[in-house]
Image (cartoon, rainbow, N blue to C red):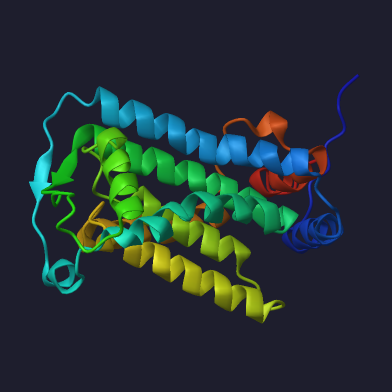
Amino acid sequence: MSKHITYYTSQECRNNITDKASALHKQTLTLTNRLGFLIIGWGFVGLFYALSTNLTPFSAHILSESFIDRAVAFNPNGIWLYLSFFMFVPLGFLFSTPEKLIQFTRAMQMCAVICGAVFLILPTTLNYPSISTDNSGTYASLALLGFLSNYDTAKNCLPSLHAALTLLTAWVMYSRLNIVRSIVIMIWAALIIYSIIQIRRHLALDVGAGLLVGAGAIILAGRLHLPIVGARWLPKALRTVDENKQKGCVQ
């Protein structure tokens, strides 16, 4: 028996997606669903990050500081804001609306591929400042920054994935319906981005490139509807809306 296929006009297509997206907006995703998104999104970033920075056959090019970097004094105490990134990103998966979560996950995977390709082909590093008791940081800050420096990869400066994913997370949690939360999120994101330069894990050039990658990924993820790696884990209702967009409303 042949499968019946319905083709919609452009207006019918938009109405169909809008109706399903509206119904989807009212759907409450379980914590398990959101954890699945985190795994296929952020977990994909971790995989590409590890492979590209450890498998590159090229030596790292040393980047030079700009006037922006020289204007931001090195301060190990910024490590706390820098590491708050690892609380910030999961909040994006927790508080995003269901339909926006798809674009967020797709954009995150795009960032992983783009940045990972650059890390593999054109690895970069910088002259990291020495970490000692001569710095202005507290003992705990110095110890934590020293620990991070010992285990962080020194071939992944440009572009800054830290900055790219911070931008993605700020975007996905921004809402005109919750101005107070949005303001808090924007301030938090700005402080994280500032701390990246403050503790010299990246330079301003890296951060700028990372923000461009993040912004580009948001736009492309909303327009291209490329396949999401691990999409089988997505709830059926989410897959239906996303697949309709990819297929031009062919059901």
